[in-house]
Image (tube, rainbow, N blue to C red; front, top):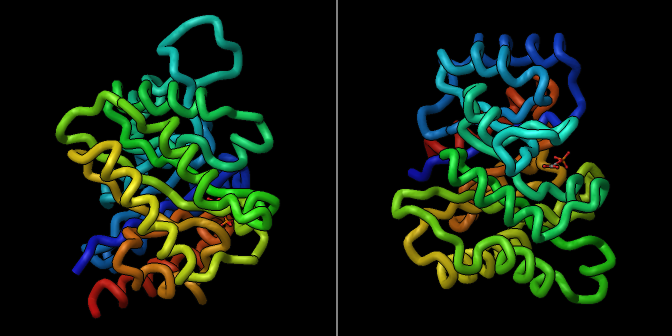
Amino acid sequence: MKTIHLFANWKMYLDFDESNILANALAAQAKKNSEQIKIAVFPSALALYPVGQVLKDVGLAVGAQNAYWVDKGGFTGEVSVNMFKEAGCEYALIGHSERRHIFNETNHEVRQKLEAALAVGLTPVICVGETAEERRADKTEEVVEIQLRSALDKLAVGADAKIFIAYEPVWAIGTGDACAPGEAERMHGKISKIVTALLPKVDCKILYGGSVRPANVADYLIGPLTDGVLIGHASAQLDSFSEIIKRAGELAKA
Ligand code: PGA
């Protein structure tokens, strides 16, 4: 039986009150969750602390959606990896496609954020994936390999470091047009090979993300190379997220 990771990226979908309401509802039903399921929630930076306080007593983790690499200083509007760690985060999303494509985050910045996250003991969830245009040009593997190499090549990591890679094709995010599970699994195989060659000693888990819903979550989770899913829209609503947790639990038992 493998451990299944369900990571909930709430993006900017929920305001402060809505985040707390959803966190309390998830906490209230947490005792029904399978022990094989590990859940982490990525709320907005403002809601993160209270949400983390509610979730920590029931074994759910919180993470940052984005974090800056310098500890402290004159960086108006940024929140550092250190500050997120202090607020109770276990994880940090790094290089989410909305950061890369809306906010022009580069592979170089992704690398700086990754190093900083590891240095303060946050487990990074590095997001990689191709755009629709790159996919049409048959460049999926090339793009993902460049993203992985620039993030991980010669990365100084401790023997006990854990890293998550989320394969999230950009065209599948928030569109309802999910990547075929077989195709995602094939990419996970490629990703696993590249990461193992670059960082042979690191414990690397691979997630799929992009239009994961209750109806398709099991199709991804049954893949032997898939350790879990990164869920956006469907994780920001109690009914759909609860259903995903339930279906993952059934699969973990099977
Ligand atoms: P989605 O988002 O599930 O709404 O497609 C996934 C993500 O952006 O991580």
